[in-house]
Length: 351
Image (tube, rainbow, N blue to C red; front, side, top):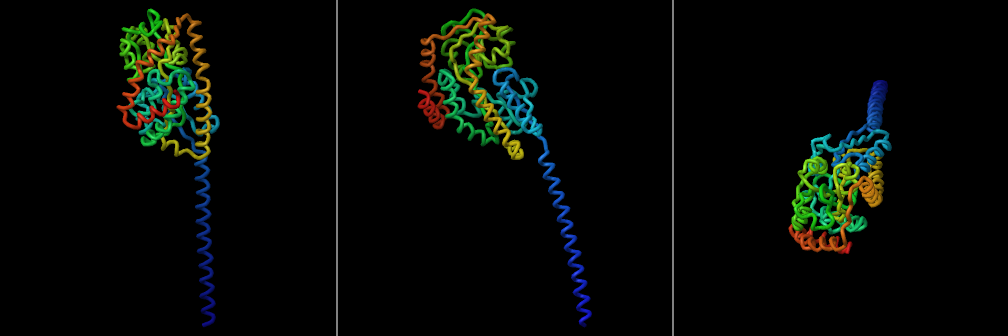
């Protein structure tokens, strides 16, 4: 009996040892697999498309391209963001919110004037003659609306990675030079926002809505007489070969949000995400701090190329502001109480 028990315990011990070895073996295999999986995850690469509304060498396009190249370099190619100038992808700047929200593409720049129907509050700083006096005024206005824009984008599965300010929007055209507001009467002028159309109608001009990439051909064919855009983009786009004059009234401020699909951003490992956020801050600061200098250089370039530049008088600027003040309140009221609240916040900050 004693011998039987001894043999029984001996067999149980052997079985226990074998079971332990099997479990440990499986654990070791599983652990090796997990380590291998972790290593693969850390080496995984990501490919993003970045739809632009301007060319890579045109105004803010240089900063968008610079951001993309810096991210690729800092992540050693693990995140490759490819900027796509107009025409490379079947999307326009006016579709930016939709195509980033549904992840047709990972990123897009979205000029605030183009997406007024999607992001209401963010367009307020671009209203004609509201915050266009100088770059500091426009920066202040944009900082005021940014939290509201971020909240609206979040509901669509989008994050605003950073934003870039454009130089003040001015008027550029062909034919007889415009020297004052009255000279704009009867001209067909390209716009990119409904509020701009309101102002042009007030002074007797005809607004024509079209994207920036369509403007040079439209000017050459006589479809339009003039266009509203910033000096930097116009000069980089070689408009001096097309236009005869520039009327540098500070028509409106403008800027663009760099949108990214939230799901795509959240898929990135922490170290890559840190690089993206870091570079976004750097390129926003760089772009917005250099705007005024670039604006002045572009206007000097136009003058050197023989384009006649006429500055608006103080009286013309004051007249334009007076024409628009009532409209600011009307537009905000149409947008609802929150729009009125944001408008008042901006006016309190800049006046």
